[in-house]
Image 1: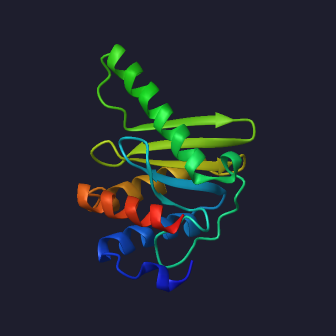
Image 2: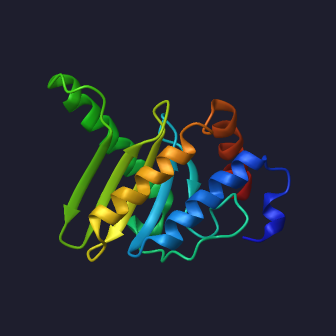
Length: 161
């Protein structure tokens, strides 16, 4: 996307996109990244053509079907499943979920008010590095991801599609 696509976005929305871009740029092996609302809607994406920020990160599009929208669906379903399991086990809230597969990894981390950060990593990504950088993202983004900002991101993403 070009810089003109950020016209009209708040500084918080641009800052959140910048944080996502930094996550993608600093962590090797990320295939797809999605910020998902509590109701499972994609808010922010690493996939070129689905960003609301100043520049599309250079992430390969070979995540789940090459789409952060698909990743958002998976993340939302997985979060619901783990929340249910935590309730049954009296384990409290779920902070993080990691799944190691033969050909990759899936990470889900709570941000705030039910929002989630989902990451699909390659088989050779360092899971501890991914988890660390996700925690940094969550720490920086959690306080700015207000209901107003979530609404702005969703509207911006819908108009970009």
